[in-house]
Image (cartoon, rainbow, N blue to C red; front, side, top):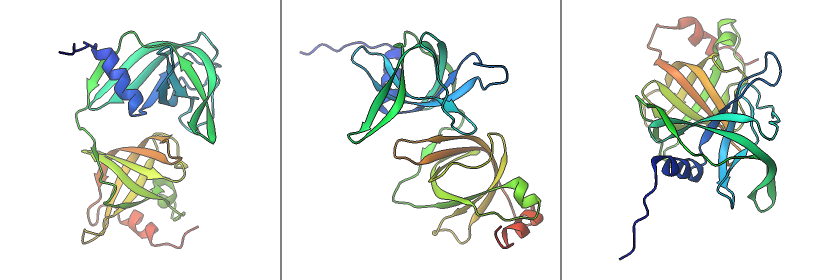
Length: 239
């Protein structure tokens, strides 16, 4: 009879996060006064030593790459299923990661994780959307619509949803900064009409296939008569 190998919660959590190439946020000391202290990255793989390979981190606003010196301590925060986890680590080096045979991307190597702490359990678990069910999504910045303009929307498809949250896959990142308000129109062909919601941009991060995933929170569906000026702006010629 084969022996079962006992693995700790921390080991299992890290394996799951890497296998799923989960998003990871790196909390660091600011490199310069006023610089961002929370950077976006993604798990890529484990190297032969068991250390973690992460996509080169970038800022949350414009994904501009940030160089992290060897030896710097980082605090990683990442989701696994319904849990939000965190683990301390430090930068061991920099490398080129072969995402595909003909494509290499900048990456960093951080020390293997010793202990993972659970910050919280998600109150509203995400539900992934079946890829065969295509729900188109258009996103506009609220500020532009309030000003009586109707710019071309960022268009994509609904990737996941939870109570109060939406995930939308896009070809390009959203132009607004994290925390800005947006209007979302979901075009579900099985529904009698499109759903229009107001939401707040929580993050916009790249995903492995070259697309972007916009995470929207505080999602509230707009009923008839609740936001007439915004509805009127959607009818204006696009600028």
